[in-house]
Length: 71
Image 1: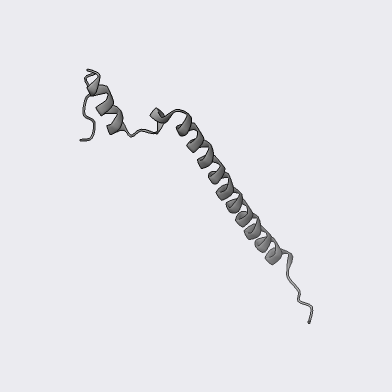
Image 2: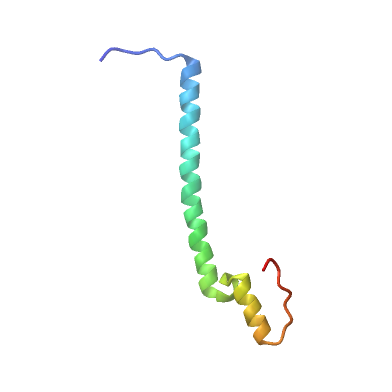
């Protein structure tokens, strides 16, 4: 295979692209870990996983006046 010559500028661009891709992959992996942590939190305290509508219904059943927002 014949040797190729890459300028320092071109190499820098490629290196920057590779570093960006590595950062993107690391962020994806981290997001997965954050999602798993959030699921564990919700399983431990299910009320934090409820929608606003579900919480409004819950409060209304217990006699709390809830103002409709965005309905």
